[in-house]
Length: 231
Image 1 (cartoon, one colour):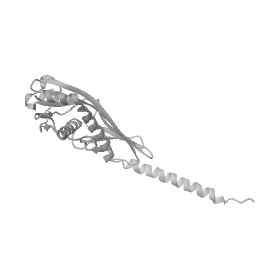
Image 2 (image 1 turned 180 degrees about the vertical axis):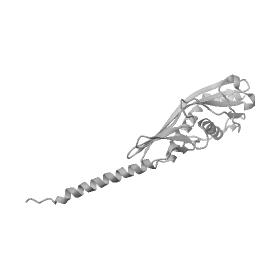
Image 3 (image 1 turned 180 degrees about the horizontal axis):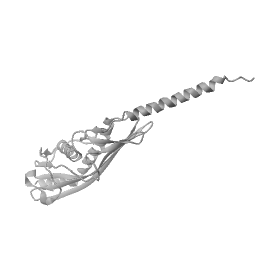
Image 4 (image 1 turned 90 degrees about the vertical axis):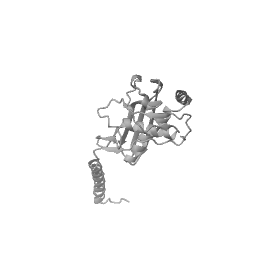
């Protein structure tokens, strides 16, 4: 038995498909048109789950200088970008402090939580031994930002977040005017999620920053050198 197909069926299906495509296209235009001109995130140290405060074996005050930003970038305030669906790049900036100060503040917080006495002063040091000043306290910590980037690439259905941090941390004895320890560490963090938000940008960036800082002071060598210098 042959059943005749309604002549309006194909036409109706075609209309539904066209309407769906139009709705998707309109939604895409809406998302693109609503994209802001920039994003901003709060850079700060956030202890990892395995980090615990320890009693530092020195009563000497540790001073932390603003870091030298050694990145090759046209805009030293920019720390990343969000690549939206039409290919445009929306810059990401720190919310409160420029990267060189934000890294130093995060390092101060880490040292404080690790049991050290941390000076409230914020010296400016160019990382040369001849510019070290005794008034900065017994132990001076400074360094360079080699890499500092958060990128989010929007796609359907997921957004891909990637953060990368590479730091060089330098410790100096101010009384002797010499550098006694130097280390370079790097860390990365990534996430795939269906939702985009500044909060997720912030979480990934701070995870990479905090891990790089913790790695800088990991191990007995640096702790022994700090103790020996403080004596």
